[in-house]
Amino acid sequence: MRFDRNKEQYRINERINVPEVRLVGDDVTPGVYLTSKALQMAEDMGFDLVEISPNANPPVCKIIDYQKFLYQQKKRQKEQKAKALKIVVKEIRFGPQTDDHDYNFKLRHAKQFLEEGAKVKAYVFFKGRSILFKEQGEVLLLRFANDLEEYGKVEQMPVLEGKRMIIMLSPTSKKGGTPKPSLLKNEKQDAPGPKVNDDKNETK
Image 1: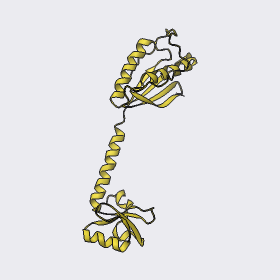
Image 2: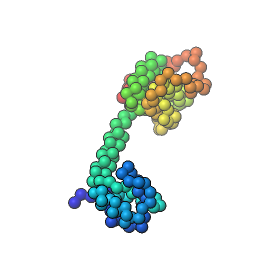
Image 3: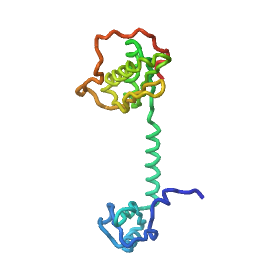
Image 4: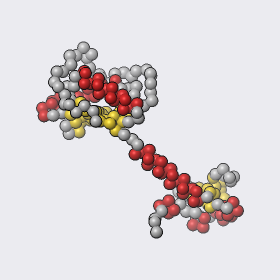
């Protein structure tokens, strides 16, 4: 026989062994009733007395169709699970010295991903001695987040994990709001761009 966790989770009818319960719901007058009285009311209505909040004092109950209640609970759990599974994370990779053309190309991709409702995990990959440019990588990621502020909010600030510095952005519906102060505290707009080529793996 299949084990049903929902059936074990809720006490119903004669299994509710407390002297009083608090009834809630649309079809009853809310208030505290003797459990025997609440059971009689449920029987008269052709439904079940279901304990929905056992830790309250007294426990909170509803008079409802228990099988329909279980069905709705299962349906809600499936919907929540399906919603959780729909979260998509798109990765965008930079080198520590990405040029402006490559940067703008990946920025356009990120905007598209965020508009589609996906999260964006952008990271700078440090290969070999390029780890010496980790501060430059952080500035790049903060610039990236700043350029995307109308499309996504920062979920995780840049953090170094092994050879990768990662920032996480989640989508937002914010459009045309007042620009926030730049995240790039020390960036100089007239600073010359680095000349080192980036890897070919652009976006995933």
